[in-house]
Image 1 (tube, rainbow, N blue to C red):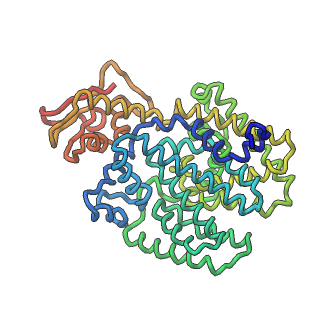
Image 2: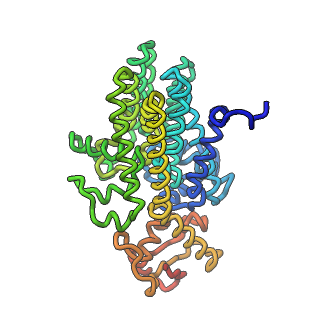
Image 3: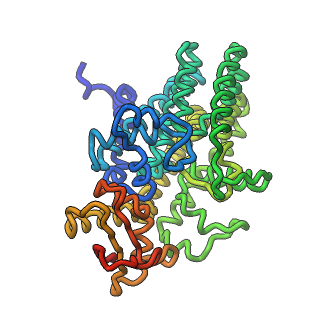
Length: 468
């Protein structure tokens, strides 16, 4: 059949996955060019293995680098294989991340279609999930592949569970090896049992696996960093939930820095966001209002509304009581619930309502992504990191083992940022201290000093780099 004779809507539906994948690739195209930055260098450093024993050590709960998290699949294995295949070319790492992201879009379709028993809902959920601006933060920062990876195994586990596949628990174990937040998966399955009316006994195996995981993790210690300190209170819960909802409808993560507790915008907001900020706020608020109105009009779908609401809330539980650690990239798993809720609204709305919802969603998402490209910290620091590495390779293609590098402020450069300090401070953060240069020169004995952070080395035998 001549595809050009097929109506456009049918053509899009037939090749929906290609349309969404290509649209996502275009929308997030800037992220493919971002260089390694900050934690990337530290993770690259601890993801090297000289032999099989070194590779197997990735799966130990005890890490010789003092890394307190257990994410062997999405950190050590991912970066180990990436370095073997791509070397230090970040494009390859970004491509792997995006391929997993596309797989997540497909799994969103399969899950929502299975839960609602309607393929159209699955198409719509995949569309809203794949084109959400919230993914920019996870796709731009190579180290946050852990969020995309855990979403893949989280989705796959529940999909296989709904299909009663016996191998589903295996993928739960893999999810736990991607990120600790997979501990919410048994609770999510429990909710699925409640709404789907299946075999309650099957849930016990997942809680047993979770128990073994938690005991093993407890023996080797939990994270003790101050920013991960739990502060359990209704105020923290609602404050965090408020922000994750705003980010889900398209507002930028950095809005957090401009909105006070009384919901009053800081005057600096318009200076930073400009006209784009006004449109983003208008679009996101319009989308929220329209969704709220539609939910009130569709109470007959209350069962599915509650189910997708729980899917948004439960994966967020580990983050709702961390007031100092809120980031949009934590939405990779919860966003399926939000996409499912929007699909319910759009599916049964008038054509005008559908058009307005699509328009506000796409406009807000596009504008926020463009804002991220110019202002998101990963974008800025990745460019700085790449510039410094190029400068190092040009000035010092090779360094002797155990050499000393000293980053000195260019007196003509001034201060790059009032919030983050001068040139050498910026270089310190972008390169993760010693980790970046040590990875670039493949020398763990290399010593690195930064003018604003450590001061100059005490010896005169060092290689100087002027930081602009």
